Length: 173
Image 1: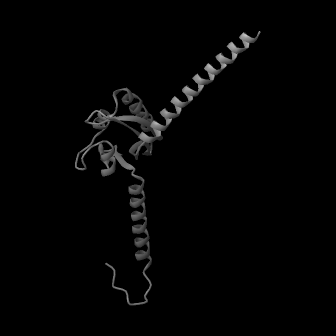
Image 2 (image 1 turned 90 degrees about the vertical axis):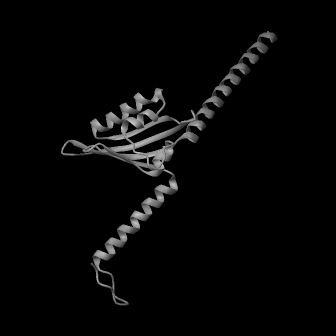
Image 3 (image 1 turned 180 degrees about the vertical axis):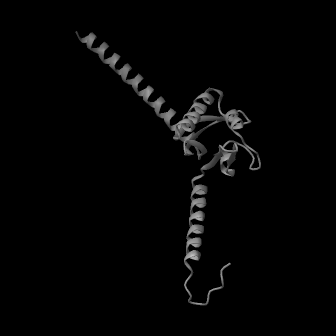
């Protein structure tokens, strides 16, 4: 317990350190919230998987819902599950980074893209924690698809223009 300070008295080193820590916590929380990033942490010693409220919202889940790894996998598009699970298992076994994309299937049948980034942590060779973020990648994937379609159309138009020019050359000779 700290004693009240007299006017003009400087804070103790412990009080200053605590204030700096609290500012850092607020800054971190506000930054994560502003970025609309979901956070998660998996305690591998007891199997507890904790998701932030935003993380749950990115999967269409209510804030009070209890989550586990099987539920996570069940929310992914069936064609994406094995790839995401393999990326998780690799990160855990190699105590490394995790970076994967997947479509998430919502109860109304709609699909949205998510990106998962994380890192595994170990102590004395035993992985004990896996944590990271979930990012809405729907707009990114839509832009990639739009770009791919535009390139296909441009290539088709170029091919057609080449055929027209070749046929014109044949007509002149």
